[in-house]
Length: 237
Ligand code: ADP
Ligand code: MG
Image (cartoon, rainbow, N blue to C red):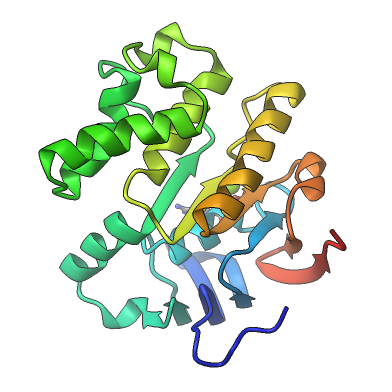
């Protein structure tokens, strides 16, 4: 699939480096010259051992962290050229995050966890209600809308987190070890759900994982090692 030149890449990262300064002159070079181009609508896995730089890269791509050098462009927008306020607003609207530990607010119901994202993005009242329920239905847990996270299984909680990430119709979802706490059967269900979401919602999905299970579900696997991309496999499917 070739990208028409007038449509910007979902992700275009060039020469991205991230150095953590630990004090007393000690440094960790977490990303060492990342070049990454992801086309719109792709489901991409970022694989690599623990410590290879996956989380650091996702954080930089999502505007939660800044590279020490290099540039990141998402859908044609340079992140380093946005001020903090614009970046935060843009991120809330266009990027959905999914984490290993779900990150749900424990005192809120499934519905309230999803609706909160729409509230933060200042969506109108009625639209919030409809969209939050639609997202919970989409991930198959509409019936659990009134339940709190502790009343649900890990798989159900991750579905709530997925619904929450989808709430504002993001163009990009970044998921960090999103199946890491799930048994393999549940992990497969969640991966299948990701695959369906990428097709149906026409978004771009980057999933960091060290689990070989993900290979079967994604369009493309990028292999990260010591802060560099050392391999790329495009699925035949
Ligand atoms: P992964 O997600 O693949 O496990 P990380 O991005 O978390 O990799 O880490 C990459 C490297 O950066 C590791 O050597 C890790 O110890 C280091 N690192 C990550 N976060 C920090 C931080 N906040 N401060 C210092 N070093 C860090
Ligand atoms: Mg990590």
